[in-house]
Image 1 (tube, rainbow, N blue to C red):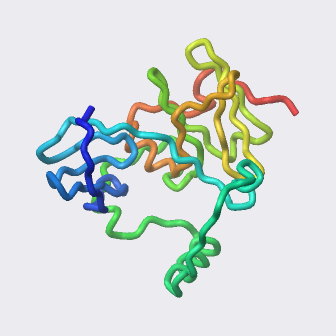
Image 2 (spheres, rainbow, N blue to C red; image 1 turned 45 degrees about the horizontal axis):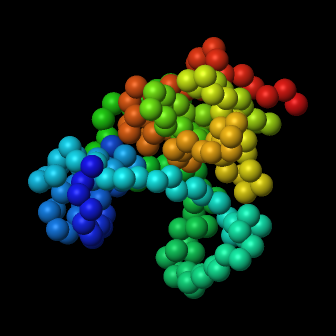
Amino acid sequence: MVAEKVRHFSAGGLYNGLVLMIDDETRTYWDHITGVAVHGELKGAKLDNWPVEMTNVKTALRNEPGLRVHRAKPTFFAQLMSWALRWLPMKLPPHFRGTMGKPDDRQPEMEIGLGVVTDSVRRFYPKRSIGEGVDDEIDGQLLHIRIGEDAVPVAKWDDGSRPLQLFTRWYGFSYTYPACDVWGENESAKKVES
């Protein structure tokens, strides 16, 4: 782990179609998902990382009634991008391709799903395969994956705790965790009966 010190990060570039962070203090490049320094003075160091869960305002307010929400007025460009992402087929920008290695063809690269990371497993659950839910045994524990009211899949252990999870595209998860599993390829996973 990196010694506790304030660092200032910004987007430093792309690698495998994903943003690399760069810190102003040492000019080290960091993988924004794993927190590992991949180039520079601190190469090999690791930052603490926490899962960031995606949701919408309605669901967040239902789960946290006292939550204060601040919303900036979107720029014209942001509104245009929001419309484009909603109605146009999702494709990677051309300049991303030059940063990417050989793709993992087990899933379509733009497949959306939930990636779960534990000490022993890196597994991708395609959203289209989750349906009413998935129960998956990992290291002797039962992991429950459900799609919430906000249309985002969430993974929880029997005790209610959550593993590190990423709602992401297949290309991002498979490049970050190249030896990952895909749900359904292992025999322990089972679909919840409706």
